[in-house]
Length: 454
Ligand SMILES: O=c1ccn([C@@H]2O[C@H](COP(=O)(O)OP(=O)(O)O[C@H]3O[C@H](CO)[C@@H](O)[C@H](O)[C@H]3O)[C@@H](O)[C@H]2O)c(=O)[nH]1
Image (cartoon, rainbow, N blue to C red; front, side):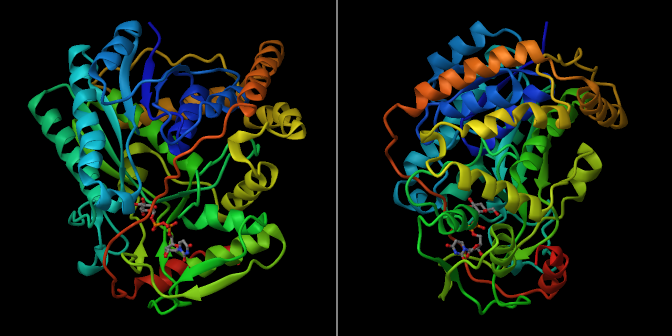
């Protein structure tokens, strides 16, 4: 039986890129999403790029009955990657019980359904937000996994509580495995320019906002504070390309399957910090002109420095972030400049026409199958070599022209249909509440390491 992965929240930004990477790695993927803050159009784009469409159900992760039905229909599911959640930090302080109901309650419902169907591997979309203000702990910038946990808002506390639920469940149930993936700042889009972040309403994060300034949808960007103790006075973050992040999930999943490690947390970051000005300058270079900005006061809750120590993931998962910040800026620019309406428009024909070239270059083939799951006694090096050989095998294969042409045509058709659909409502965006921080002195060195952006 083929290996099937259930992805909850698989039409969202990180969920859709992870679904794409799973398909490219040869997995069968079943996506559930209630489309509260995302669009089914993401599935059309996944199909255009990979030549394969994941099975999709409009199912809410808090609905036990519907979840049951999905597991019943797909007995091949042996693992779950769990993204489905509410994620607007500011909103979480306004309606905290809703955040606990959906995020924590939804995870418990999911685990119960998994338990019933003997599915024992869960990769969880956690966040660096669980660390809260790491700058207040001596020697914890950049942030290792053993940094004390201390989220500063209800959203972060739901992530912390879910980690604990998964940890306790794995301890109580031998044979269960949990990967708690703590993301730093995801950014970027697909290099083909046909898949990217599609924030609803007014975005809150730096990269999508810069994108809007660059395409003229926004006059300028407000820089939140230039009085931090960094090389240019602005705050430092660890920006990781969304494809690198997605690949981290595939590596974690392979690790769970191969070594049966129980529950473990891994940071997914680059280990390199960039200031806000580094990012603005880097993106200006990509766009080829200056972008208007205005320095204003610090944003409530922002901290000086959130940079990962990714060593554990590098060593144990055989994974590391590979895409540069320049490429991240380039991919974002290609996405926003070609798709000003995001998923509410058709992908430009010239980008669709370029897809075959991209696939050849990337060695993409859509029909690969994941081999039989390795036994639990296999070593980590076997896990790494399995992951590596999957990638190598994919890279060697020629494009399967006939199938892909047919499937591409089908996906374009679906895309056209979706583009004429009603626009979505309900603007949601992320933010982050914390407390201001002091520099540890490391900030300058870490951000200096990003000098190539300038
Ligand atoms: O208009 C803006 C938006 C952001 N920033 C700055 O840019 C940096 C990055 O901000 P943003 O993109 O909003 O991300 P974070 O606040 O770092 O939070 C992101 O990354 C965290 C993990 O590191 C997650 O917990 C959050 O959910 C996610 O939004 C910060 O220094 C902000 O002050 C500005 O100066 N102007």
